[in-house]
Amino acid sequence: MKTVKPFAGVLAPVLTPFKKDLAPDRERFVAHCLWLLEQGIAGLAVFGTTSEANSLSAEERMDLLDALIAGGIRPELLMPGTGCCALTDTMRLTAHAVRNGCGGVLMLPPFYYKPVSDDGLFAHVAEVIERVGDTRLRIYLYHIPPVAVVGYSLDLMERLIKEYPSVVIGLKDSSGNWKNTEAILKRFPGFDVFPGSEVFLLSALRAGGMGCITATANVNGMAVRDLYDRWRTPEADRLQDEITKLRKIIEAYPMIPALKQILAHFRNDPAWAAVRPPLVRLTRTDAQALIAALEQKKFALAA
Amino acid sequence: MKTVKPFAGVLAPVLTPFKKDLAPDRERFVAHCLWLLEQGIAGLAVFGTTSEANSLSAEERMDLLDALIAGGIRPELLMPGTGCCALTDTMRLTAHAVRNGCGGVLMLPPFYYKPVSDDGLFAHVAEVIERVGDTRLRIYLYHIPPVAVVGYSLDLMERLIKEYPSVVIGLKDSSGNWKNTEAILKRFPGFDVFPGSEVFLLSALRAGGMGCITATANVNGMAVRDLYDRWRTPEADRLQDEITKLRKIIEAYPMIPALKQILAHFRNDPAWAAVRPPLVRLTRTDAQALIAALEQKKFALAA
Image (tube, rainbow over all chains, first blue to last red; front, side, top):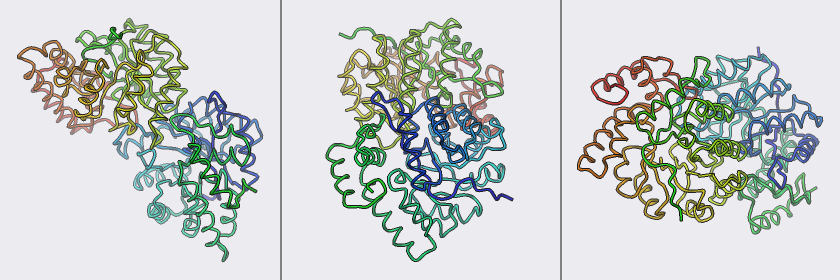
């Protein structure tokens, strides 16, 4: 019987700050992670899409993970993204995460080749699990077809859960499609499902979900956490409305540069605005419009 | 004035053989490359899509490149794929290729984030060029939107050619869309364009293309080379028909496992059939049907 739930609540796919030379900025990264935990963030999904992790080499990711642990973050709060195109990279990052005691890993499917079969994706995940060969491994599948294009079908989830019930224990659903999240929750009771946006947080909790893993937690984590804490109260729908409204303001712009711009502005730390190509910063006009829209709002960072 | 053309003719995106444990098989790889050159292949586009290069780590690619050079392949005949999602990986592989004297590199755009702007892609390629900082660098852009989804627009090509005329000197067009290849050839005279399939070889040569870079050259290179040698003769259309017919037989199946199955069969070397996940081997039924269809045909490997 599966009773241990390594993660529950609101997780942040942590933004990765860069220095002027575009190298990852370890100090700002550790400081931001510590701040997120102070905000009530239940887990740090470092090296996700929002983290520009696919613009980082495997070495850069491992170095940043080491820096977090050295910086005092408890590894059981970490859910690093480890899914790469190459089997060997995925294995290496996953083994490194497990060896360091991470609570789990968030695993993209290999996303270059298209189309790929469920058999091929199953073989990939199975190889990683067998080769890592560590009973502490906990995998959350990362389903984000709008970006990765390749995703996990429900049939594939079922095969993986059946074959590796103590390893493949959950999923982040960034399909943006509530029907998909709902179908997963119905079909796999006990599977730890996190929608990839706080817009679906209340619906997910009501349907048996574990919380959410959402980009905006980088700037508005406390309010999202507040809904998680009070979802069974009469306040819940109002709280959901509020956090949804804030998200809508932000997601009118490209999400990652927008979030970095917000941090740069409200922390008075322009270095935060840097992104690594192929992403580009917000234009000055967009940045001003976004900040103006947010100045009217209350949220954690502005407090 | 740009006069040196590092590559012209028929290039093979070389298949990567794997051992039983799915590690790259250096010996078979070197032997296959030497055989391809004997077949009249003008250049080895190692680590392309057909090579399952996106299922290899950066270290595995560099190790295989080193093995080729140690195995006697002249580096100027090599056009390794070096384009990864991460700026730092692309830089590292590109610098390694240049340092080893490769004739050029074939560069995928960073393909995880979508959508991305031409500005972001330009910044990525520009960063790589500036950081590698070696006048010997020659880049062929690798445009393959059916797989990578992210591609190079004609406007982006123009910006890159204008900014780096001695570096960004050509392109492989695997769009599968002749109209796109034709438009590139018309707009950028002197730019070295290779369609990604021999189906377009004759059309490309007639329109000023440099040759082709085609997966089937792994098994039928000599015949494709023959068309390249005789494209101005009255035989050209017939030769084109013949190689197109052979390709159609093969591409009725997933291309990479099909090509590996062909090598495994006609070389009586079953190890060649291995693919790395997320790809899967041909089913036994498909393999038998493919081989039966090819037994009727004459081509290099069967000779």
